[in-house]
Length: 252
Image (spheres, one colour):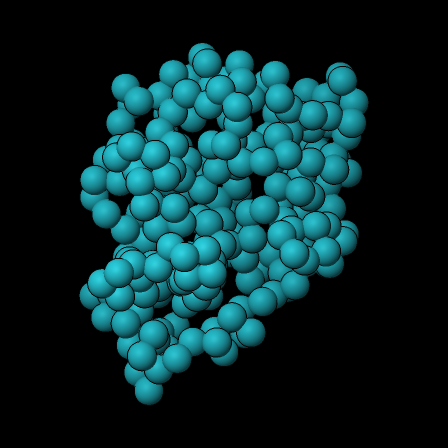
């Protein structure tokens, strides 16, 4: 789920001696042979690819992926502290739609399932797109962001139900509040990551700091109109928010 702390998580995993990892999301690797955001039928989908059925269908089209080429591109560009490292790690938020394929195409796969308070996610999506001139001309960006967040929560719930036995689920909030407990769960899932540690200062975008829960400052930026727009989408799918322990904000 984008805007949920996966970049910090990626940077932390990459510090492990046993890991080969990419310095960027797998979907942006040179030679990536799969659907690419911002191109063709995924034009306009950046950060909100879950909000429209046609975008989700493009990203889940099995024929659109050449996993042999993807795997070769990833392994060629991966970096490691130790050339004998036995674990390869990558992350790409859109790949939460193709967990079944990843489970089939890679040997002994393990998954880290991550979600975050959808209001904070949507605030980050809207701020990112608007700051880069990617707002929608009809003013529907808040609604599209909320639809995207709902789609991600829905798919992630199904991923955890189907593949929870080969993964660890945790929320952004738990990762920030209880980093050692989450780190211990990840080390149990992949024992080779014995030096994995979330308590470190890492560069993520314009920040270079310890893992910090930014929900409060992000949600504080929301206007009453924006909260109301999110709620129009969240209300019919309140079951998803309840499932992950998130409360709806009241309309102001």
